[in-house]
Length: 288
Length: 230
Image 1 (cartoon, rainbow over the protein chains, first blue to last red):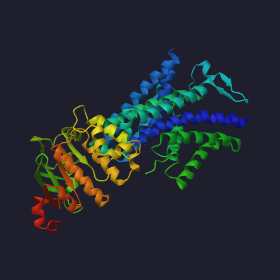
Image 2 (image 1 turned 90 degrees about the horizontal axis):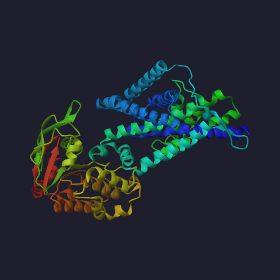
Image 3 (image 1 turned 120 degrees about the vertical axis):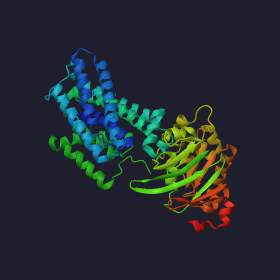
Image 4 (image 1 turned 60 degrees about the vertical axis):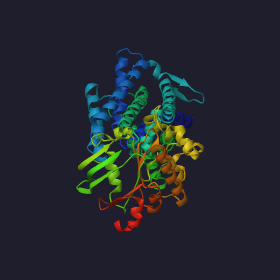
């Protein structure tokens, strides 16, 4: 029955990673920015929610306020950093280094303001265990993670394909030059993308720490796995990124049946290498 | 309508065009010819505001527009159909038209989405198709539709015939001519297909090495053996 439990754990982790992956992919596809600081926004969301919960704000309200703060942070990073670098026509490498620097600053500020040590949410309901039959046990926090992640996935798909702003953002991603000369205002679209992605990534940023607690440097591994999910799923495909995140999380979890846990990050990179060798455009790559 | 006065533009340290001037009347179609690298696309980009001017002026309806942003020039009615990339390939045909119409075609627009679907019925049939998966001819019809949505007054077409079958080229150019004449719209047609371009043009300009070396009627161009200027 261990296998079944690991399978369920994989779904929980995979869904949360999937949301990190789709939000990162949304930014990368549209702006071509390798937005590493996304991990910082993810971490920030968790800390803001923790702080609000500690001040007695109800959990739902705390999540909502954390989303607002993350949106503001995303807008700040886009307008004050990326947009300025783009205006100066800096290379992708410069933008990447600036993003890495932003991540480091965010992590350090969080560590300074809060603590570099692990913090736990004081929410008794979150760690209550639900027995799902077949000896599978999940906490309410894990169940909530799955539900919220699937909702975020469906919500982002709906936004990108059914709303005018979503279509405009996809148009900017599809042909930035034409977007410029048809008044779709790519720069404004980039700002909206960053705000939406920051709102979305805040959700796993709050949900995952319900289980594992908060640490300032916790965002990096999910982001790394998410970028691999994006590449393996096919850059530009929201569904591909989400599905591959779940697949990677499942493989990591099920590998525990055969090899020790410290190898699980190796599994991730093994998948990455396999894709780079045999299907570099990814599983769900749009036909071009 | 559109007027260029001695414009100069280039990339980095290199000046590509200099002293380029022409003025177009409403409804006039200019065939803008010249070999690859002569500076035609650079001229269009400079007129559109995609490249900064190093000298000279661009005016539209006797107003200087060379300080305006690209978006503001588009709003005035200056439109560019870029070479080989005039559509959003990852969006459906309907989405292509929807996003461009939303930003450009208000209530009093000369061309609404319905108008372009009437002009190109095949696009109506292909509404749900991913634009990038259509044939070259259909993609070019969509590109032309996107360029005219709203109220275009001067349409700059950069090699619209590239990759199209010859009979398609003639049909498409005829459509461009009709649209221009019926709506008093000016067009600048950059073309490699000289014969087809001369057929619909009212005027011909030939560019060589960044400068205009011939400016006259199609008859004059034919009489003086245009190849001499290439």
